[in-house]
Image 1 (cartoon, one colour):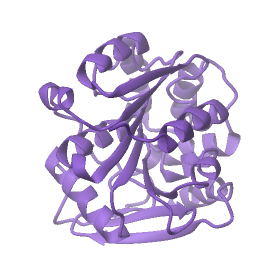
Image 2 (cartoon, one colour):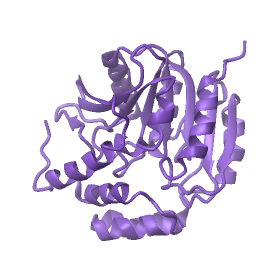
Image 3 (cartoon, one colour):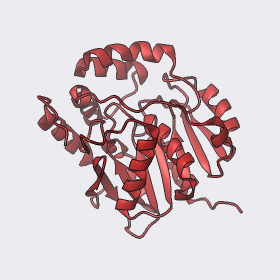
Length: 291
């Protein structure tokens, strides 16, 4: 397994545990070993309910960030929230099998779902997690019952130049102060959970592993995808032009319904807009597939 150098893992773990403590009382911590490493999963909900896999955004989001949503989502689903391998969290990498390509990511998720014993699964991802979710659905549409993408990045458009410019100091300095300044800018001063914010700050020094970010999902394959999809777009997102994302997604995902969360920003999702987001997500996940 790869090491974490001099990084303050104890401080990160303390911040992580404070956010995880907000989860329902029936939460279970699971570790699934694959050739890519050990994936840490936080699970809750009835064991015999349909599975729902949650993929967080990158850069410190972790599975803990779904704390405000899992109560509603786990009423009718067995929820599995993942710490992405290579990202801040409790998953660990296998040194000999790094995640370098989209094929690696999809193979890792194949193995993860097998390890969880999950059959056809509803898949929900935020930001980078949505990019992974769409790639996986194109890879294995027979394994995905429904696909929910929360303000997806890299799927339909590129990041806004202003977003990348503001993110650069955070990526270069990787400090708690730079992380806080960036999030305050992107969330436009929206109040966020203080313990969630502390977790983002604690993740700033996590050993950097370059994420898989290319290529974009194949347009032709997306246009032919026969999986019900929901796009929940943050109306105040600074990551990209949400209306352009909506316009392109309608052409590239024929079975997608698009909804705007007008007061949300990219980084207030999923937790700070939880009631509205949960209403849309639960309705979509419970609706019957026509035909």
